[in-house]
Length: 315
Image 1: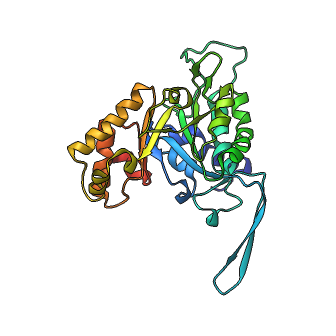
Image 2: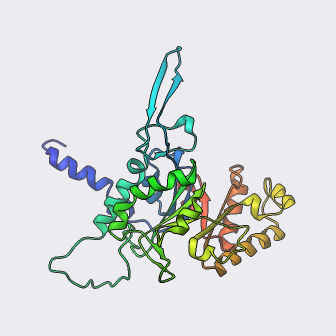
Image 3: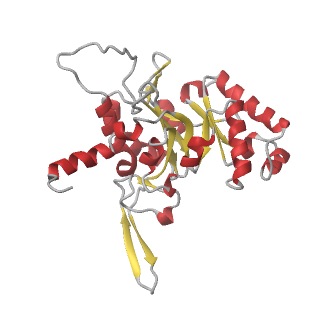
């Protein structure tokens, strides 16, 4: 690329990670990108296949600490973790200080939303009218992103830090929320759901709930979940009875298994909630693929997947 100016290189590099380049030929799919810690670039890897639902496992520490690890040859390596960042990873032992929620998810997501929602001078009415701000999908900007935060640390300690991280999204009306005064859901291009260690009472106390809670798919006995949640999830083991779950570890779903799953999905849908089942087998692939196809056909809204490339072509 002789003669290419450094400025041109910067522009080309920026375009390669722009939302246009990532999703121009991509359609949104009912996939939940699970196990983010396996991926080199979890947000981009999920978006470029059209996974609408994306998960980040997060840690917030109330006290800083130093992690000392022994390397091959007997040398040690010290890594410091502070209290100002939200760290992303599945296991605390393997956290890296550079893998923060901002660095892996929020900075790109915010920049994409800013690009998708330009300002016009003078102010004009768009030809393509839309009742909320645009999302990140180039071909389907009306489809929101479902972002999950799996709280690995204590919920009440983690929640205040998370709220501060998302203030820039709130200021620009990029988050969906539940308005307790008007008792209605207000749409937005990003729907944030907290799972794991839930800060239930803190979320309930917010007059505008920008952070939804993961509803229990297998135990939706309270009507309150319709106001606190947008999605109900549960492990396969919690949805099926013990014998059915044991059998499903090595075989396709039986008719009885399918009935139990459909009943759970129908119950969630009756409360206005989407659904996700996690904790299925990871191997053999033939059985896993059969399960995913059945879950989709029975009304499962987000398929919990690890292999994004394979799942994108599964259905």
